[in-house]
Image 1: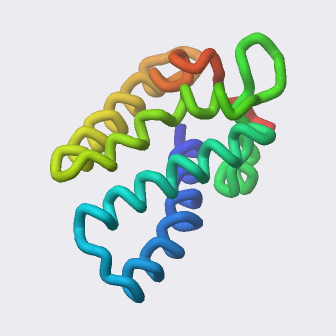
Image 2: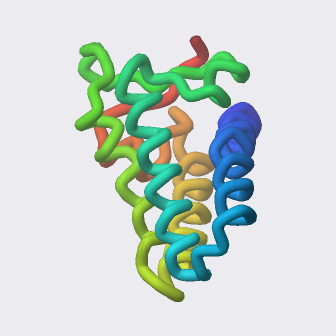
Length: 130
C-alpha cells in the first residue's frame, strides 16, 4: 500500500504543480479552479492508465494497473476506475465527497488480501508490481 500511496503522491505533484501555476497566473475563482483540477486529474489518469496502465507515479514505483481478464488496459477501464475523481467538479461538497471516497478506497485496499480497492473491483482491474 505504501508504494501505491507514493505513486499517487508523485502523480499529485505531476498534475498539481501545473494546475497551481495556471491558477496563480489566471485567478479563476474557487469553483472553477476546483472543477479544472478535478478534470485535469481525471484526464491525466484516463490518458496514462488507459494507454499502458502506468502513470508517472506508478512508473517510478514500478506499479501497473492491469485488467482482471488479462486483456490490455483501455480508456474505458481507466474511466471506470477513476470516475470518482470527477466528484471535485461539484461545488462545495465535491471536495468533501472526494475525501470520503479516498478514505474508503484506502480502507478497501488495506482490507483486501489482494490489495484491491473499491475502484479496482468496480473496473475489474488491479495494481501489480511491474
